[in-house]
Length: 158
Image (cartoon, rainbow, N blue to C red):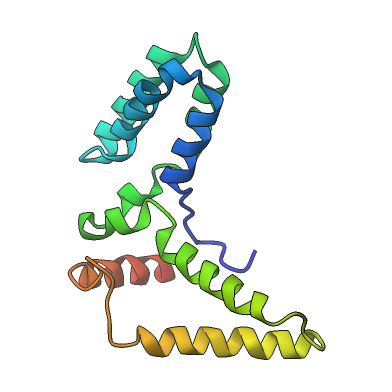
C-alpha cells in the first residue's frame, strides 16, 4: 500500500528453520542441505533448477513443505540484486539485530505514559541507530552502490 513497487524477500534462514521443524529428524539434515542449495546457488536460474530438484526429490515425503517453497514468490527476490549484497539480503539479520535492540531497551521501561512517549522513544532509537551507522556501509553495499542507484532510478521511471 505505501510502497507499491517494493520487492519483498522472505528470510531464507527462517524458511529453512521452518522446514526443519516439519520434516522427520532422520531426514532433517538432508532436506535442509538440499534447500540450502536453492538459496546458495550462483544465479537465479541455478536456484530455480535446485528448487525443482528439491521439489522432485521431496514431493512424495513432504508435499506441504514442497508446496510452501514452490508457492513462495518472495523466496528468490534477492537474486534480482547485485551479487555483492546477496549474502546480506537473503536473510533478515540486518533488521533483526536492530529489532532485538529496540525490544531490549523498551523492556527496560516498564510502561510508556502514552502513545506519544513511546513514539518519542522509538524515533530517538531510530535516530541513534542512523547516527551510529551514518558513515558506514554494510558489506557489499558500497561496491554495489552504482547498480543499486540505477535499479532505483529505473523503478522510479516505471
